[in-house]
Length: 243
Image (cartoon, rainbow, N blue to C red; front, side, top):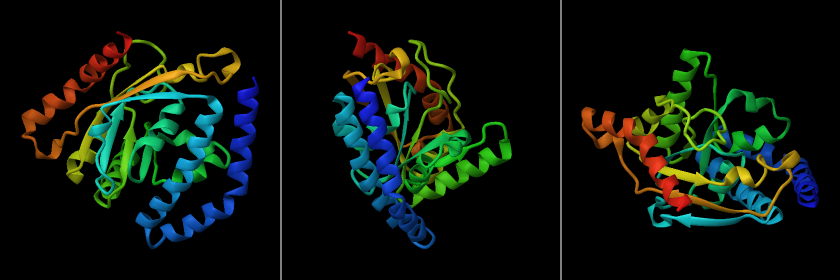
């Protein structure tokens, strides 16, 4: 209960007092989006690290050597357990990182401003044409050096079995000739969502990164097989976490 109250106060006060910085970053983004993404990442990373400190989260990182260097864009693809997926991933990736989020996130007061500053995209899953435009925009941003986080299940999933993966977003890595890094997240939902009344609890979580793969450099058959295998590869990593 105490952690939840502290985290809530920390989040609300931080977001409100940093609004002038948001407006500054938004102004920069009109002419220099890459510069705005980098500045926003530094701000958001510090904020998220503070939130994880309050939550008492202990992160075990496997495959850290597979994270691309700063300046190299990548599409991070993994299972979706919690809101903390975004928080923790943002503190680990070396360069600017946005996310492909549902358009409903735009309705979250204040917080959506900072998610936008990071270079995130908001996907309308019910509008095919709008979805294609989002993928096109994501490809262009990755070509400029922005990494993106993608959760193909489309929603948070607290079950052991993965939900069906939506594969359209994979083309952003393919068309921008960027790396795709598969990741497996274990117990992230035990930090908050699985707890009574969403109380924050100090938890040990695991995140694993697979070696980067470049789908744009594969043949059509190789790429098709790789995309098909992604859920199985993530499931295999998750099983090692349980052991």
